[in-house]
Every structure is written in structure tokens, then in C-alpha cells.
Image (cartoon, rainbow, N blue to C red; front, side):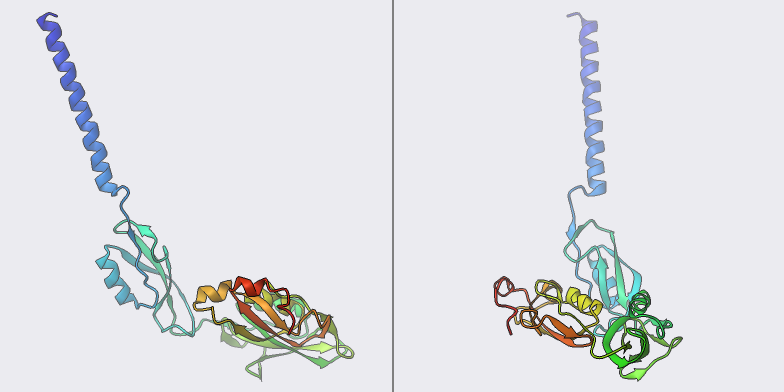
Length: 264
């Protein structure tokens, strides 16, 4: 190999080395810039005030931003009640955590016109207004299942009044003749929320909800299912509308699979 070829080969090797070094440094720089594969668990900000959350966030090199407010009676005013991402979720530094805080005052809604319409129509209007149906009672009337009166805490309320969002309102319905009855549904295996909805659709009331001893957290309450009810559909097939049904809920699979769970 002559000297010219040797010099050319050396130049090619040097150029390749420089190119490799540039690619390596670029990839390494991007990895450092994006902190590739590095994340830290999000702290649990729930229950903290916004100043407390800001302090904790700064310590973890994160940011907190309030995006919503709700009213939860059991939570302290101004306390954080929800967050996204959730606690424990891995995020990179300088990530913004979006939180919802508890309002000091409940949101007010206007009670829609509910009287002189059917129960089904009233049910839709109530749910669309952010309210909940409480107890259902009946009064003799020539108009069956017509809403005759609306009450809150045993006091009559009228359309146009402002009440707290999420409030439970009671309905007085008309009953054309005698004691109208409905089929008693089998609620076993349903969550408490699902069972309450079924009872409401059947124009029945929810009595007491008895939580098993193994229910220790809000998550347990949401996942718990009905394993007993009173009255039981095994002993009662039909029931008067407006009757209350008591529910026993649990997360114990043995009780949920108990063949005689309905017998009370």
C-alpha cells in the first residue's frame, strides 16, 4: 500500500471515529435531557391544603395546579380531594399534577319543575340537575305515579328554589287504587350503588345499608356487593311500592357465594 492510500485510510478511520463520537454524544445528551427511564412516584396530595401541596411538590421537583373544585361535606374546606396522576404513579421531574379541591360552599342548583309529571320524567330531570332521589312515598290520587309533592328534609320545596347540588329530595307520588305492588328484585351480587339504582327504578326505597367488618376503606365500600337483603325474594315475590329494602354488603367471597345468603 502506497503512502497516498495509507493517508486516505487513516482519514476515513478518523472521520468514522468522529462520526461515532458525535452520534454517541447526541444520544447521551438526549437521554440526559429527557431523563430516559427515570421517574419518581407521585406523592399523595389528598387531604392537603394547596400551600402544603405546593411545598411537597417543590420538594419532589413537581408542580401542582388546581383545575376543579367540588363540594364534599366530609372533607375540609380547601383540601385536595382528587389528583391526576394518582399517588404512586411514576412521573419525571417538573411534571404538573392536576388537583381538585373541596369548595367551602356547596354548588347550588335550581330545582326543576317536578310536580304534575310522571315519576320517570322527574327521575331524568333530577339526575340531570345533579340531585338524587331520596325516599318515595304514595298518596291516594286518581293519577297513578304522578309527582304530587317534592320534599327535602321533610319540608316541601318548590320549583325554582336553589338547593345544594347532590342533595337528596323525596317524592310523593299518586296511587290510583289500593296498594300498588311491584316485583321484589334479587339484588345479590350487585354493588350498593347498583342496588340503590335498581330499587329506585322499581319505586322502592333503600333502607339501611349494613357494611361487613372486612370493609375498611372507601375502595372496599365501592367494591362491596350485596350478599343479603330484607325482604328476600326467596320468601317474598311481590312488594308494595314505597317499601324499604335493607341491604347487607361485603367483600368476602365466601359470603357472596353462600347459597342461603338470601334467607333471613
